[in-house]
Length: 124
Image 1 (cartoon, rainbow, N blue to C red):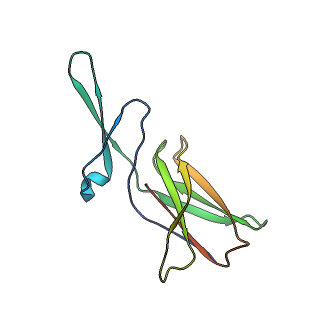
Image 2 (tube, helix red, strand yellow):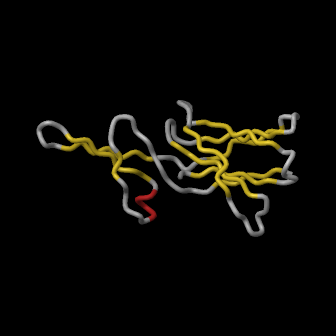
Image 3 (spheres, helix red, strand yellow):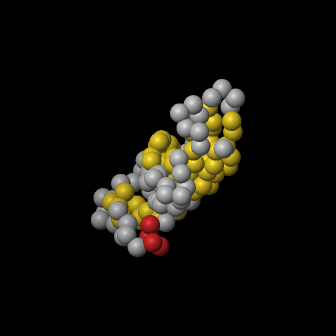
């Protein structure tokens, strides 16, 4: 039996602007403020909202592996976490992914070492 879940967290990336670390309160954790200076002393501020990742599905590949598919904001970085027990979960990061232009990414894992494993994706 393979299961999945999701957990919100935050992080965004930009090729255009240096990142400014947001405050630690919950509302600010859902977005990142980016700023870029200019030659005239003005600063451009852009707010990027990064979606909380969602799980689109999990598939048994029939070859001893499963593939989980996730969706979020295009170009944003996300982690995939796994745990063997939800009673006292010990979530471990198993992959770091950057969402494609369509906002999706996949993670494939072997089923041979774990009789049951749970997956979720989060913003690092």
